[in-house]
Every structure is written in structure tokens, then in C-alpha cells.
Length: 206
Image (cartoon, rainbow, N blue to C red; front, side):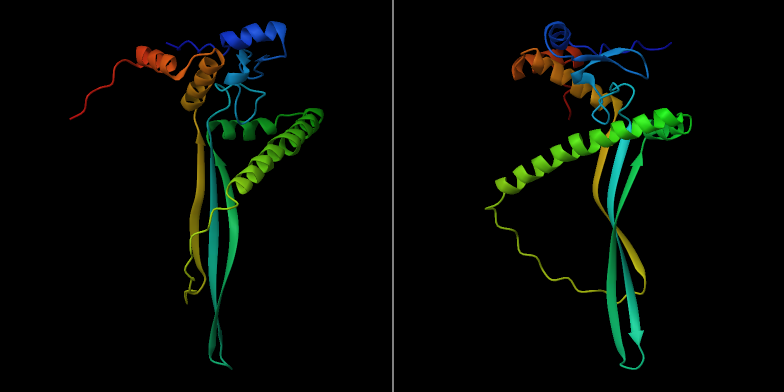
């Protein structure tokens, strides 16, 4: 038996949508209304129920080469590093399959939409946050780093996972609900009381 989808429009945004700027939209995937608190963090044009199952993997791949010079009897070791970025998740796979069915005009529109969203929105916001972080930590001394010695291994490839960001539907829905309660004016104690009423008292562990 299918479960009923959660309400994706909070009271605060529903009231503000009648008087102020547009804070309620309709998802092109499920055709349901959703407010800014339940908009997908990956693409605000969709709701959290339709676009949230995506995982980002960022890795640094290092390949070490060893070159032996017979004339000088010297072994030279050098390294090459590359950044690897991979996306996974059901919503990412769905988007990949959807692209093949898009018309030429729709494809051009989608490219320009995401280009503007990327450069004028997302990247600009990331750079502003990065500058604030740099200024905030300008006077913080860096820890001493020990010198690394190159290993004499022929063509060895190592992968270092630098970051993994995972988005799930449950986490996105919970985050939207929390933002909606904050927008409604609830304080931390009221929010905690509501969560306890829904989840029940904590279970004692031995």
C-alpha cells in the first residue's frame, strides 16, 4: 500500500507567498507544490522528494613512477596527482537517462539554465564563503608539517578520499522540516518538544 507523501509547503511560506515574493513552486517531476524549505539543495527547481538521492565522491589519485638511469646509476622518483570527482545515487542515474530524451531546444534551455545557476549562483556563493573563511583564519598559525620522502615504487597508484558528501531523501525532508519550524518562529526548546512528541522518549541503553 503506497505511503502518503509528506506536505512540502510550510505555513510560513504559504502565508508569505500571498503577500510577498514567490516562495511556493510546483515540482516538474511529481507536480506537487513545495516551498523554499523543501526545495532540493541540488537543484531548487525540484522538491526534496524528487531530487535528493545523490552522493559526491572527491578523491586525489597519486601515481608514483620510478626511472632508473643506467649511465648515471641514479634512480629518479616522481609523482603525478589528479583529482577524481564521481557522482552516484538513484536520482543521478535517473537524470542521466532523462538527458537522452530531451529535445534540442529543451537541451539548450537546460544548459543555459544550469550554466547561469552554476556560475552566477553556486560558484559565486562558494567563493564568497571561501573568502570569509580565509579572512576569519588569517591569523591562525598552521601546524608544522614533516617532509615527505618519495617511495621507490614503480608505477604505484594510491587513492586518497578527501571528501564524501551524501544526500538522502530522509535527511533532506528532515532538514526542510527543521527550516520550516525555524521560519515559523519556534525556538530550540519548542522544536525539541515537537521532535520528542513525534519520535517518542529516548530508549534507555545498558
